Picture 1 (cartoon, rainbow, N blue to C red):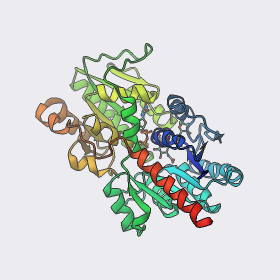
Picture 2 (cartoon, helix red, strand yellow):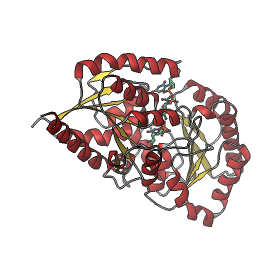
Picture 3 (spheres, rainbow, N blue to C red):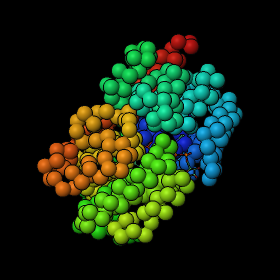
Length: 377
Ligand code: UD1
Ligand code: UDP
């Protein structure tokens, strides 16, 4: 029996990584037709993930521009989705997380009266401008969604506080753990063209891209890295630099060519995830890394003032240090020079999932489509 059509819409690297397990599970259900639409808010960083997980989009808006801003992404996604949604008339649209693609795809679906399932629902800092614009993107998506797939109990509580009906929320775990467990292997061999990293040194893995860190906070972060590398000669800094020119230009200008710094292109997810496993300490403003690193037993210093992922902070493997140069140095120094402090943080914990989140999500979707057919007969 044909249960219905599900359209999965996403546009950036992290959405693709976290939707890949859901797509894999959806495709196992013969009675559901799965249609994939990418906005390509990211291009090469998205394509890296599509090729790793062998995802072939049915529609590709190919939106990315080198100088895009929030206005051009918003209008591009909204206008681009109109004809696709009108033509395909899916029974459900699935979106992920908190990007502008996420929010605008949910809005376009609402305009077509198509129900929306929100994967990774309910993350909140309660600060409209941090992270910006993600906090508002996910809050507004939550208002528009019909099915809320919350990764943790905390996320569920957040949704309940916003008066989302309890029967519309499922705690599923985060699909990033499904993707990670599929990708990290103890016997993984890095590709032959991988940068010449000295794995006998302690590796500091760094990523930055948050809009609220652009400018002086990012300068502070990079200055702290320079000082740390000067103080600890047994350390190498590995920094796959985000393609955003605002991030890339400053990173290259301040850190390029320095001894024991590897500024490299964004890595494919497979080498990146396995590099996390080999690193000593992770410094990042990313959301996804805060979920992945704890399950690999890697301490994370979060270069932000707020986090929507309090679970690993509570468990002690993630520390919110902000962007103050002295604060970053103080916390990193402690972990680089005090083994007991390091060991306290380097625990493998898994508050974000058991690798079966996608199965749970697809089970709910299947039931949703059954009920929908029943109620339309
Ligand atoms: C976006 C999302 C953010 C998400 C992040 C994941 C919004 C507003 N922001 O931020 O929520 O956490 O993606 O990485 O939705 N670029 C390339 N190639 C790529 C990708 C980006 O060259 O494959 C460059 C382009 O110059 C582009 C710029 O990066 O204009 C910025 O991309 P954008 O999606 O606007 O911002 P992100 O910081 O990636
Ligand atoms: N990642 C990757 N290659 C890299 C850097 C990050 O595949 O060079 C992965 C990382 O493992 C995580 C995701 O990209 O799953 C995080 O993306 P990003 O930091 O851009 O976005 P956020 O998590 O903040 O939304």
